[in-house]
Length: 338
Ligand code: UD1
Image 1 (cartoon, rainbow, N blue to C red):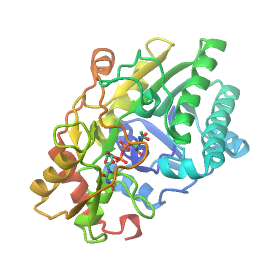
Image 2 (image 1 turned 90 degrees about the horizontal axis):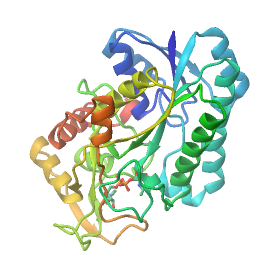
Image 3 (image 1 turned 120 degrees about the horizontal axis):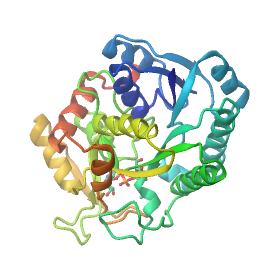
Image 4 (image 1 turned 90 degrees about the vertical axis):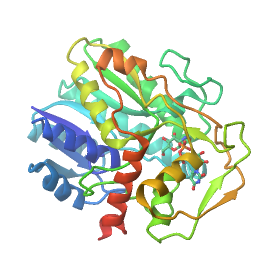
């Protein structure tokens, strides 16, 4: 029996595949490679000694998806495949709603046809919106995210909840990620953004490796200790292990589970930059720039529920995240391009 991982060649997907393979699970990856490289499959094999089945296809393509379900013995799915650039989603909302909603709808339709009713969904802390106070707890009402990207996460969560209401034989886990950074300690897989990175850590890493001149820190006049925004950074390997635990839980009781996957600790932009410099010994020049539209001053997780119910908690520190990011970036200055 195999676990289908959509978007399994992507940043979080590939790290999750590694954890699954290392536990002896069978994995089938589908990925259209729109934001990933086929080299990831080789790298996964280098790390684990096992080569996952891989199909290059778009999850929205139901016929292609059916052929995978016909060939492979799939028992559950982890659904990562989606567009995720917040700024781009504001510019191209139609593209985001179409891709992210049609993707999940196609997947659950085909799963239903093949009587596969276990799914872990890649959601985001952005579903808490801007009015809930931190630390965010799973029982807070879902808020209004500031971007179409965030709205697609809210809508996908709702689609899955409704599917469960219609058929209690589904077992569903909604995982709300905080800020995933870091890389596998081998330095073989990591985050490889296309174009100018939108997110903080990939930008820091590209400045450190000399691909960009300096980092813009978006605002130092927030109501926080050092004036820069505070986020809950989580090592991608910890995050990947959270998926394994969440998947295991689906076998216990058929329900809709919702978990924050975060550390429960806040770190400011300046703290992250300073830790990166300290750990790597590499300078990261920065300038203070105006605030970025839509940024919240502070958000972090209450991570108690995942600990209590999944026996999962983060194990890696901010130092580990910086070290592993640098290991990946310095070994792969151009990402998977070589
Ligand atoms: C955003 C999204 C989140 C998404 C995540 C990963 C929102 C509210 N949050 O998180 O849903 O899952 O990206 O894609 O939409 N920063 C700089 N300079 C930079 C880049 C970032 O100072 O060049 C600062 C930002 O202002 C922010 C912090 O670093 O304060 C973290 O930013 P980022 O890594 O983009 O993540 P979020 O905005 O927290």
